Image 1 (cartoon, rainbow, N blue to C red):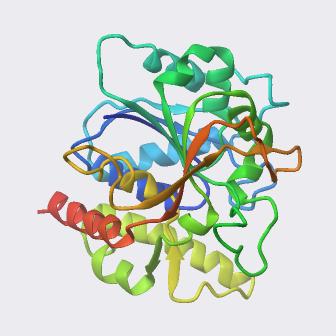
Image 2 (cartoon, helix red, strand yellow):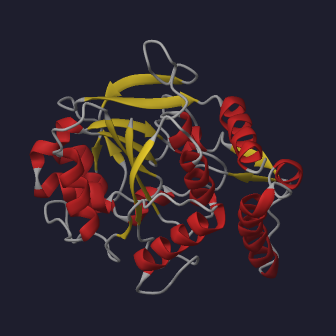
Length: 306
């Protein structure tokens, strides 16, 4: 399969774990890596060059891993869409369109979004004919109330959706693109213990050390504010690898994990779900095979360093 990885690598380090894992997966042809922006007020990076910083972080990881393949690393837009019908312009948007329109390959194309949807929404708005040539896998969106309860002290507008509400509205309300959604109740299952990181990641070469240090940096920052992350960390972007590289061999599909088919909701201006009886069918993942996902990552990391 072909994939385009789009993530806010300058924010939560879970995106770097996902990127390392997908780059170690031989069944995947990574066509490009897009560094995307955060919410403008995000504490991880309050600069006005969030996308450039994300791309720089992705290059840093690639260099640490010693990968020689010349995979394009592209900075997306540094700002969100102004509304749900006006696309941003960027090299990343142009790349998505060009890759989707290729006629020299039959390999399916997945766009893997672990943060906002600015670039993919802008690409579909710019050239609507690419919508039926892409499967979008998105880590984001709140719980569907009939499927799961939100966590304690939850935010009404889910973190990734809040990065660019207009872009999510463009994708859900205005496009026909195929969506595999991993909402908050599902991506919160991607939980790893710090003990696992110390034993199975940190000692495994430069890459393991680098990745673990990104988590430890967040731990140090939160401790300054008298916050304690406890014994675990949620690597919520890693399901992007589980649902692509780790599909079943025969009758290929992410058969390891459970989903429901439901009508795509309408996304309100406030970033909440509204029932849409004309919505297209989308996949909403409810249970993920976290053991397969993390054990595969540990094994690939170790094999890379032998």
